Amino acid sequence: MSLKLAELQIAIPKTFDAGKIADQIQQQSAINQSNAQAASERQLEKNRETVTKSNETSETSSQEEKREQAEQERQNRETREREMKETKHPFKGNFVDFSG
Image 1: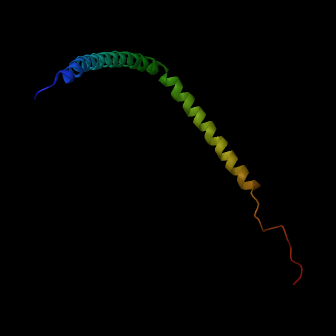
Image 2: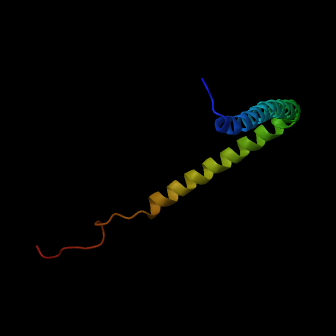
Image 3: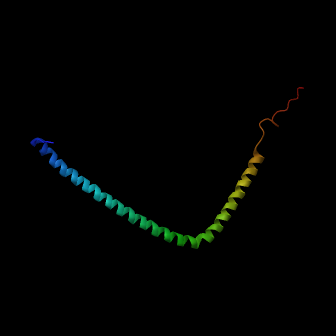
């Protein structure tokens, strides 16, 4: 492959630029990987602390959840009963036909 002088003047600087860009991409990948690893380690440590804290409060929160759930069920039942009483039939009791 023979290159002319004008082609070499363009090709050589582009080669250096391409090498620099490839090096930057490789370094950026390494930096991204180290950042991801650090974030993963922070999340793992946070999860460990959370599990310890949640075990301490799980007993009280489960009792509160049961109370809240019972209250919600009671309210739902009362709402359904009230709706059943308030619902009127669209025809019954509205018109009496005396013509026979």
